[in-house]
Image (cartoon, rainbow, N blue to C red; front, side):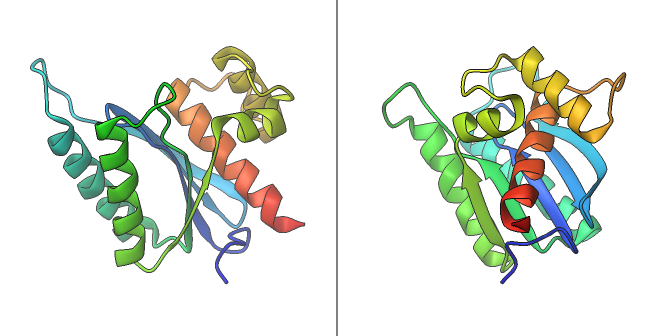
Length: 160
């Protein structure tokens, strides 16, 4: 099984239709982070945004050759949001096409494990991630901190 990526490569995603944060872990260590977004001054359809995300994930796949992918579960406001359903389906199809295990976690379970509270603020989560991974002083976007927390949570969960 590929769920234990601590001796391999894991891509962690804070998946979103507008912007996605990503973090790559190799042998349990953070190798790189970044964000994926369509940069446009005009409104861009969700189909175009998700297609851009998948294309960008293909580039990450080619560069890092991961063993697994861990991501946040796309969430709406308590009901089905068509763009989030599209995102969820596209990620599942992408991971299946690359024969990757896709492990998704709720924001609440990750925030509880990393910051100690299911409703931890973005700042509290960022600080907890900085402390846990020795990243004090680094500048990252909220989506990158989220992706790092998801990857760290996945690695700890499957290490036991």
